[in-house]
Image 1 (tube, rainbow, N blue to C red):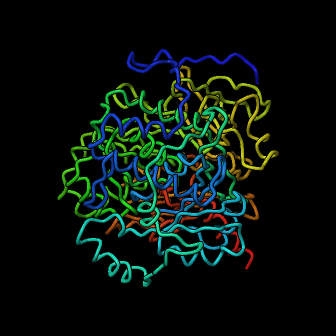
Image 2: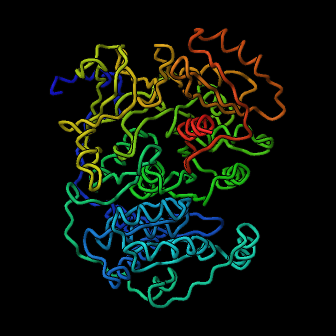
Image 3: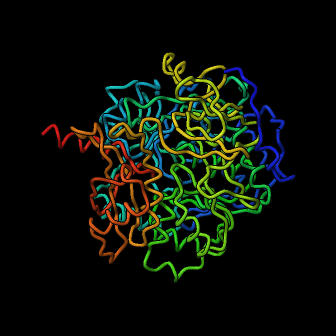
Length: 562
């Protein structure tokens, strides 16, 4: 794999974006200290009416770090954070880093089995979680190495009188009110902050070698793996983001934080970017289209990192015209392919720019993106970011594929992980000579633009033909009555696999299978057109809005097994 990498994409860079960035070897948390020193009274977090300044976030992060030290946290210890987007999630993240610990991002949607697995795999002895999740955590505690549970509630960071009303709302929503006493192995977040001093902790950290984060990958196949990301991995990727969004002014932008921070894209493109650049974060604990539209209308965010399903849900909201979304200037869409129709419609509604980017947890996560204010190519994931190399490997020879040939995309750069936590074989399978094999199939054109045709494992082989679900999805998304679609290969006794499309229709749509079949055959070669269609009210998704194609395939296998 040590072949010379040509970088035709560099000639496309506008003069404002450097080809190479000289990264400072700094810790992630040093940027919070800097923001607090330079902009102490500026709003760092806006949360459902509550505002916190950079100085407050910094002080509370230090207080939490000191509290963690009293609980025995040493350099390199893993601390799990199981929280939605709220001020406590930011304070906990930086608090763990100030204490010398390693953050283990934990999905609040995890059920007991998944939680038990991740706590044991990471050897976490402390978890910071939400009151309504406490029963779930306490059930698995005896099966793990957990020694301490720090509990907080959404109400803890709500302004008066919302903080008084919220417990009643929570009881109505979840049918649960949890009261946790601050004693023994149970700790209240608010008490931890009150009891501690905001003292700096001097812990020598090597940004290049020391881990900041264990980011568990989805686990749609097999068990989730802990991606080991260093301080420099995350700092370099955030700095690349800063340079790519060169028109964004330090300490002047507002970022809406809908993408969950326990997902690596939300963590980098919202939280770490905002701290590094002293931007204001407008946080929402969960995605609700109406609340999001109201928040944009009222708070006027300028940056809106998101996922296609988020933009689709907003565009299809019946009351979208009531809201002013014109403050939104820049959006980079990640986590899944961005349909062209969605891109164009969202730009018409907001007047801002929406472009597709590409990345994966193992790359902190971003490696490619389209330009926001310069030339972009529809249907392409864009070009590699500064300091990032990318090649396509032939599926037959494993060597570099010729321009235009489909193969596996590989990437190399300072944002690439150290490896998978305690998984030497899996690490060696995807990391070779510094190159990360992404598992995505695609090609590069002569100018250096990259295109993803599909996940290696999602490619459908039907009747001897290689079929790429993404190509079919793009065609179906252009149908005016379709809101969401995912295409998967399902077992077929004759063809091996056959193409099935799962469709969510727009409200009031009258589309039938026959009409859809005629439409597909008009725009696709016969072997690519879906043989099966299923209309659904909704599609299964991850917390960040990525449609779970594999879950649908498993459903089909279970049906056959019965």
